[in-house]
Length: 241
Image (tube, rainbow, N blue to C red; front, side):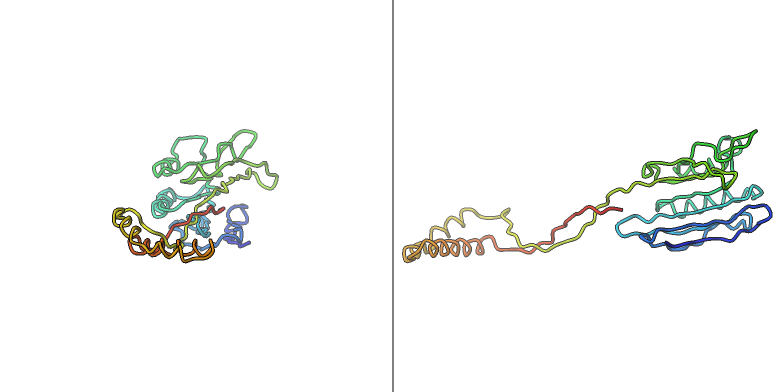
């Protein structure tokens, strides 16, 4: 299990700090996020890699409510630069998604065909309900379950998403010997067979010898008119990811 983390930047307000655990079946490559509104934004960016699986860009963010509006612009730039990969953005962004008023973030991820998976409020008080903790991805069909988990450790609910353990194809090549009958001159084959020394069979004393001689004659004719050729054949197997 690998751990990536950022330090808490404001312990008095009990805010900030990001922690990410990565299962050791993945290779985790650290990246540099384009978001520079620090210390108001704490973030981790990694690329998850696994053989035969498309790389996944994971961005974990804590955004302070006091962050400037340039945050959305910088996040959009990050999304654009990684659009060729599967992207997963999650964390406490402190932008209420229960209201569409002035929600630039919502417009940004919709513009780039991303989807926000969490639907229930993640911060509930006696007087309000707000959806501040988000999971955003450009591959929503790969997630079979998502939602919130009641937590007593924070004033926010925990969020989660379960990704499919889908199958991928692994392809490799093997070398095989075959014959190509496509352009065979059948008439020439017939003439050669007629001229073959079939009389040799009468000289054989056992049925096994006769059969062996028969096969040798057929092989000689085939090699003359339809010679062997070596080809590479693609073999596909299923790989769990």
